[in-house]
Length: 97
Image (cartoon, rainbow, N blue to C red; front, side):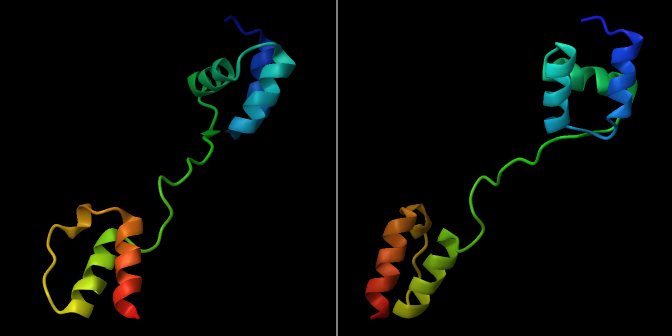
């Protein structure tokens, strides 16, 4: 897509460009947001991408649960990490009572 001088000036004025701002500019200029982002990068305008969501919440891991279960029972339980998280939590609750 060809960009006029006024369109490139609008992109430069939006520096640092964010994903949300790219969406706004796309509707204003009649372009796609991906085109706006690509043009901004081509011109050297700073682009701040949107944050990616965490793949899984931080917290207790399967290894932590297996360690706690092993400590309660006093035995080594290598390989138990392959069990489902819910199963490990249920087992820990059952032996903690």
